[in-house]
Image 1 (cartoon, helix red, strand yellow):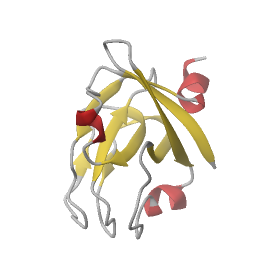
Image 2 (cartoon, one colour):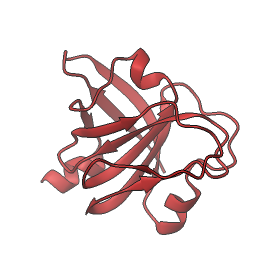
Image 3 (tube, rainbow, N blue to C red):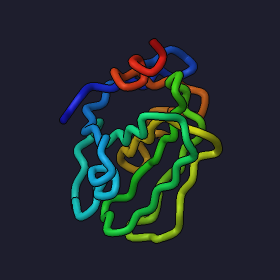
Image 4 (tube, one colour):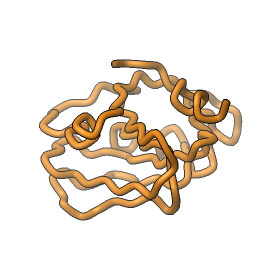
Length: 129
């Protein structure tokens, strides 16, 4: 299941990503494990279906990632930059989130994406409505 997702920065710039959606427990457990490549401007959106504290890890994940934790209004709560491939150290949200976006490491910094910026996608819109 692949969808478009847009990140709108504080200065009004918009960046389009193509993301796979992980909604089931099994899809969220597997995530981007075992992949050796992630295309530019792509990623995976983990949908938890409700606001909750989230924690990710890099077990069996070979591609370094930026991990964006997003609340139910689309606001980025916090970002873990340049995560370490294969690490078992938990990477946690700073508060309750609805979803988590994983993108290529360095993308958030290169596009100047920061906590407080907004993510727009069907999953977030359905929660807000």
